[in-house]
Length: 62
View (spheres, one colour):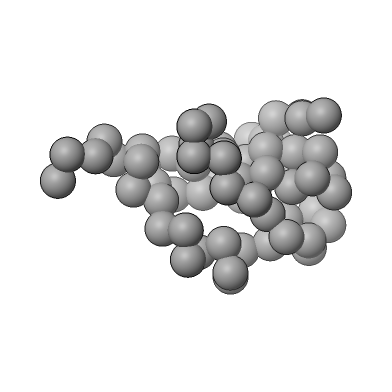
């Protein structure tokens, strides 16, 4: 497999995951390797293919 481990996020996971703060939908930013909650204005990192769904680990976005 030629992909780096951080690029192995399964997009089907988006159907099961929600924002831990708002319980709303998330969008996937492949370039930044983040799951974005537009409602909460937070981006949750994906590390080694694993979404880190902790508000303390998220960064604020516009």
